[in-house]
Length: 146
Image 1 (cartoon, rainbow, N blue to C red):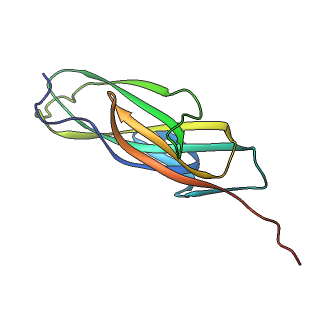
Image 2 (cartoon, rainbow, N blue to C red):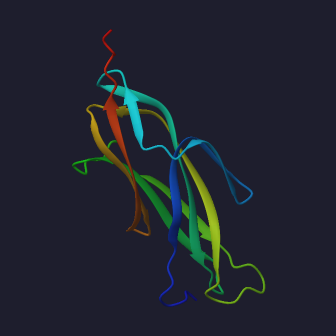
C-alpha cells in the first residue's frame, strides 16, 4: 500500500570529483563545485560524480522506484543517454506507514565530452517526475599573458 500524498524525493544532491555510497553514508572527495575549467574546446572531463540522498516514505509493502539522471546542455540537449537506476525499498519492521527514510546513491561519469562553453545540468527524476537539477558551468581558462 502506497501512502497517499507521500512520494519519494531528493533530499540533497551534490557534484564532486568522486563519491561512494556505502552503508547508508556518502563518502565525498572534492565535493560542492559548480564550475569546470578547461584549456580549450572540445574538451573531456576525466571524472565527476553525483552524491544524493533520497527521502522515501515507507508503506507497509515493498516499493520499486526508478531514479534517472540525464546530463543536458543549456538548450536541454542530452549529452549522453539517460542513466536509469531501479531501486526497491522494503519497510523496516515496526515502522509506521508514512515514516520517511533516507537512501543514498552515487553516480560516477568518466570522460564526459563538452563541445562548447556554457551551462549544463544533471536532471534527476523519480518515476519520470523531475525532482532536482544540479547546475554547473564549463568555462575556458585563458592563459595569463605576462
